[in-house]
Image (cartoon, rainbow, N blue to C red):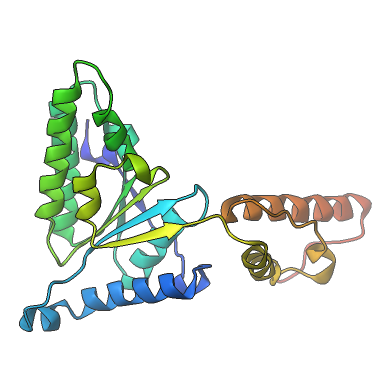
Length: 242
């Protein structure tokens, strides 16, 4: 498998300030970024530099978007490695594939994002003939994490934190949970994404008990429905500045 087939280079621009993060999580990420910025100064005092961050919790609650925002803030490319896409029936080949991506990220001082980290954690628990080989794969990943240079950042995400191998879990110095948002948090999010639209398109039904991603999809679907009805009836035309 070619290296270009393993990774996604995401250039999406996401501002960290636009993320709906609890104050304590935002503070933790801010310090994480400052440690990267002032790593030489911290090292001069003999202090370790945290460069590994694990994002875990509900799907659609902002883990991937947070990774994009971190890379954007630093002005670095984000290399996304979806571990569910690289696990090969030949475990040795999988180890080699993952090692290639780590080497590229270290070489380019990029932000490496391991998506669906639980894929390897789950695989270790399978009671079949491949357990030994999968353990060797996990050991390879642990070694790669251990030797990942401090001038690059390693981020990872999982929806199933409980299945992550404890040795891998411990190697991420900073771990941030992502929970399903409350009604108040969703209202703030709805207000944020609706702010750019005219008043007649803001009057949509707001759904609760869902993730940020689901809320965004739901809001945009309802906005488009109202707009399309207006366009069909001739009540609205496209603004000249668009």
